[in-house]
Image (cartoon, rainbow, N blue to C red; front, side, top):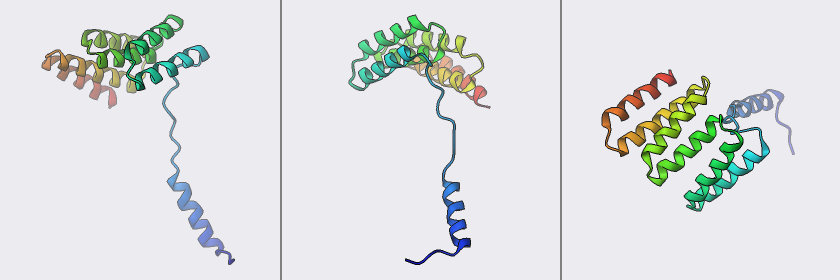
Length: 138
């Protein structure tokens, strides 16, 4: 087996390292193991289309961490899927209350609010929510 010249090996190593982009993953929903277990259970229920069970599980997690904006957003998404658009909007707004400057989370919440408003026939409200999401992404 022949060896690669050092300059070619160095180039290949540099090329491979350029392909790996280290990006921070999404913020963890919680550091509390009980909350994380409940979120995993809710997501498994959601995957099996057990949306009522999933929402009840997230509500249990919220009793542990009532100021957790990620949990409120998770609940908002579930209610949106369930077709309860008013509750989805309310929960997304609650998530924004606790988001504490997390602009990405805020933008996602505003998009969720826009979707809920559009589903209720509020085109102007949906557009206003989208505008707010775009502002947060700047």
